[in-house]
Image 1 (cartoon, rainbow, N blue to C red):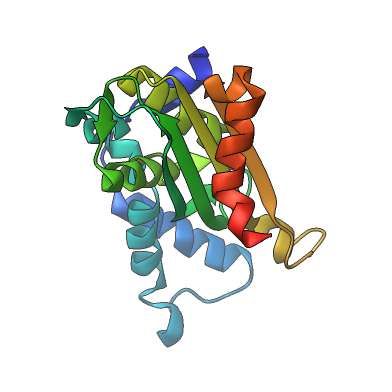
Image 2: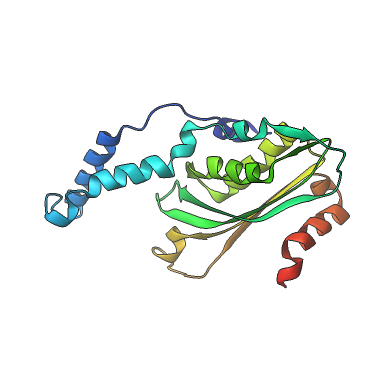
Length: 202
């Protein structure tokens, strides 16, 4: 696992300072020509501060805590959870990107509760992110924590920074994948996981 992935899998324990966010939002409103003291905007800084605390809550949690409880099973076929919804914040423009993650793994004596995979996605998504790093971090964490024979992570997302600004291309979808272990080295296994994820949709 690369150093960058290791760093971003670790939580940052600094608490959110809501008044600092509120002051910054007031300054932004004034800078764009608005009056932050008019009735409709009076509560906006506080609302935005609470929203950022929620959207970046992953900075104060360790996604590994969701992989600590596992079950020893001899099952050695693919485990797949498809269509895990998430919302993350693009670190380049602080605009949301929303999508779904598909996670499959080939156990090597350890399986975890299916809901734990969704919790891992949530913990890693709720921080300033780019989709490529989000995908790789999930995959590498599961390899490390489960010792799986293979891990496959595919993420599909709609990025606000493409749809509401810049090129303004609504409907565009960004797809990233991270294949580890047998899903990377064995074409048959990779084809199997892709068929399980997409086979019934096409």
